[in-house]
Image (tube, rainbow, N blue to C red; front, side, top):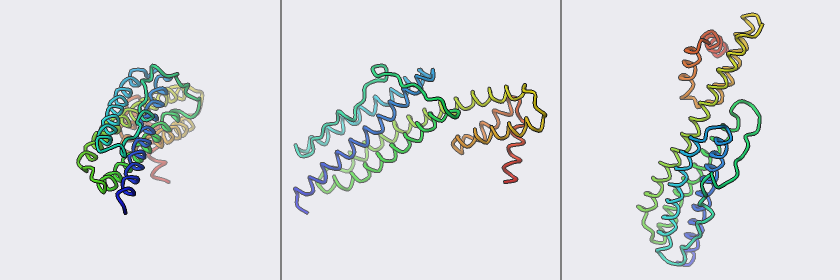
Length: 229
């Protein structure tokens, strides 16, 4: 492969990194808008700070690449998103409890994986044209930290939203005029829906929360249904 071919591949890979970075930060902006629309502006502001750190990271990455010559110059503007406050607020569509936040969380996780994969490829491709792998690894570590914080934050808001709304559903179910067996069965069904939308590692903690809030019979019925399935 000629130097020209190697540099062309290198430039294409830099573009791929910038595109993947922009897709992640764009997803973070959408998540912030969604949380703002749901009355979680404090969490949205926190997520926006993570986005700002990632903006700095991609800007520095672009400058670093450009320092190796014009062939590596790539416009990173499309990967840098402004704060949520300067963008229109998205309205959360009505649907299953927490579905929009769940989709937002999964989108962030997908975009993070794609960005880290592009950075993994960049280490090899750019190394072939003489760019130091250490710098790429350092940028990848920064992305892992801030992208991970962003995913964890949206996961936490999703978990909080589910807990609030399902506990409210349990409260309404408890006062409804239904026979106790029917109430427990319905409660167990709601619990299953709740648990299905959580990360596996979060489920036991939320079951303990339901028990603490006085819905231990629902939890017992839910566990029994799992054992029987």
